[in-house]
Image 1 (cartoon, rainbow, N blue to C red):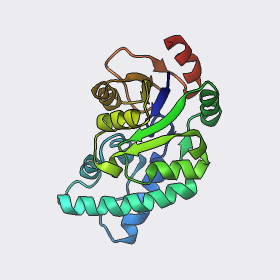
Image 2 (image 1 turned 120 degrees about the vertical axis):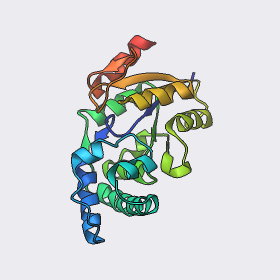
Image 3 (image 1 turned 90 degrees about the vertical axis):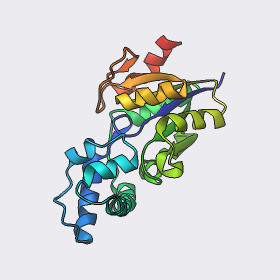
Image 4 (image 1 turned 30 degrees about the vertical axis):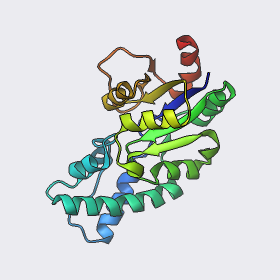
Length: 211
């Protein structure tokens, strides 16, 4: 049986909010945007949302066209910035990925991020060797539920878990028809009773209990 673990990015694999905020602030200053500095809290408040909702949340007071133009410029610079600077990985992330691969799991990433964001993460840390496929909203403008299903089907997964940290991740997983594990150390809570990770490093052991 081909089993897959599909990971969310923010609040699950890493926390990039501080460096994303720094990169966006640099960009808006460079282009003369009059918005006040973008904070880590601003970024954390919209993490997990699709990019149009991110623009709406961060650039309130601007027209839709202006918001999307600002977002495009910030995201392009963000990708470059994160390739150089990375973010904050959750403890024992790489060791745990290695253990999961040794146990025969195929690893994937699905996020609501822009194109190039997942690649920046993989390139900065050299993690591309651990992941078999990725998908994101920026590639095809599809929501997370659609992209979880799309990735699982094209990789012929017979069983898959999605590991994410917010309610929207759970909802998307149910929409796609797969099983969910809550990264409880991340940014959000889940209303439903689901398998829960207190630490990323506990994932191999948790999977053993789930069969």
